[in-house]
Amino acid sequence: MKKSAKTRRAFLLKLELRSHPTLLCVIRGALEPLIETLGFSGEHCRAIVRGVDEAVSNIMKHSYHGRLDQPIELYCNRLQRRTNGETELGIEILLFDCGAAVDTTKLPARPLDEIRPGGLGLHIIRGSMDTVQYKRAGRLNRLRLVKYAGFPKGGCNSVEEKPS
Amino acid sequence: MKISSRKVDKATILDVSGNIDMSNSPEVRKALLREIREKGVTRVVLNLSGVGYIDSSGVASLVEGLKASRESGSRFVLFGLNDSAREVLKISHLLKLFEVYDDEAQAMAS
Image 1 (tube, rainbow over the protein chains, first blue to last red):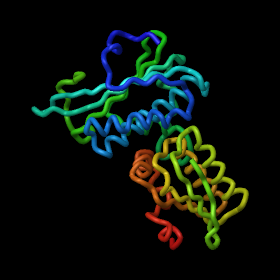
Image 2: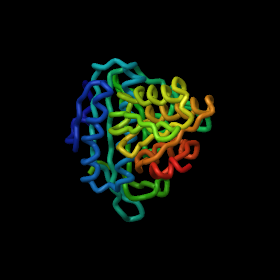
Image 3: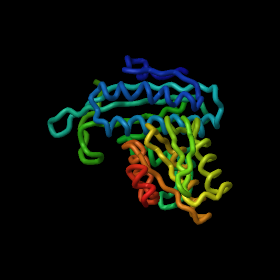
């Protein structure tokens, strides 16, 4: 995969894997100790792992339509931002895949008051992460997920966001 | 992931261990629907105390079990959820839909 110069900086973690669902546990197993090491709480750690796992599952299902041998790349980087004079720790996860461009307006996210299986992945990603940004970058899909550690979700205004 | 079943009184308890994600959630769905639809068990109790992680496809399997139990007039009960499982059900606005108990004794006494 060819990516922009921005993604060629040193990352805390880089994973290259195929779109096989049995590899989801590998991602979870790599992320969890990394996030714990960075100092996130157990609750935040579970949220980040959950958000990333659901995002990769969505790539496998919707971008690659169940094909098992397609490339997925994951990058993790540490972030920090200044809020009310305090530095807040964060983590940024970038996911790249070579599937067809995703029409985000057509992704299945059902109303939560319906009792039926399916369509929960997007809700779970959005409910677990602070930032979810999709972008088509050339022939790649790029999903950017961000989670901050220190403040209740939506309870602060970021004044700065930069890789540490 | 492993699933085993045992009969206790008129209930079937399904003991699940491992992680439930899109690689194996169809097995959970299949086991639940077999007990509820094919065997006609009147109370199916799912023991999740050995489950470390459950994703949206696993949650979808639980919802299918719940729907099947409502259609057949049986009961579908969960126990032993860890923080991760509770959180994913809560985010999905499904936690209140299920009968959830802390342990097997409570689930069986319900």
